[in-house]
Image (cartoon, rainbow, N blue to C red; front, side, top):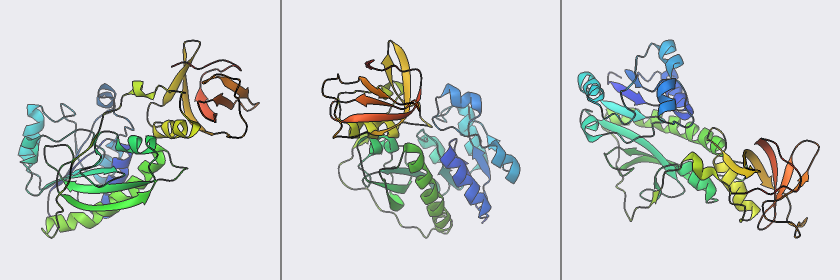
Length: 305
């Protein structure tokens, strides 16, 4: 392939996708990524440096002036190189129209949710899908426009979200599907042998999530709390609550039992602490076993929001 391909990425899934494409002898002309300082400045969840791949495969990296690629230097970079194809691999910002217009073929975006686009556009679709207790995820590759996930669909694949999944394991599945689909799609795009499926219907949008959204509301049943915690566990900032005004991060939990009840205890109260350090919290309905957390807990203490 003689076409000039650039990939924008700065997350684990993007790293694995790029590594796979390079291993499959897909020629990448340039990497656009962030360094550690930039990732911290712009609060990139799941950040991963691409420097290792750059050195191993001798692919140059451009570190942009802004994550949104809206600075003049960023536009100059794309205009100078006149790429054929841009691929997003873990890039959490929209690509401006003036940069898309420099591409000869176009840009490929990746988005997923429990429904086909235009349903489920927007931010944090993996987290929201888990929070809402969905049992499937549809990964979709689309032709980028300046809008939010609104370009024609190029390919898609559905996979299961099971009860053991966390945000991390869903990202593993995304990585597997994404790299396979891109390997199939890139030659078709270069040869202009691809099909476009227009999005139809009324769009819906997921809102952006922030670390503050991890505050636990104990006035829910244990199943809902289980979904909430697994949706924002590592590599995200995590779910949290307060004991005696001290923040306790909860990384892993599961419904404990619906027949062993703690009716005399208050919602959010710690009702059992085992020798392992695992503990049980009384919920609005049922109870929750917490098995991985940061902080110190005491029996009978009550979590506050």
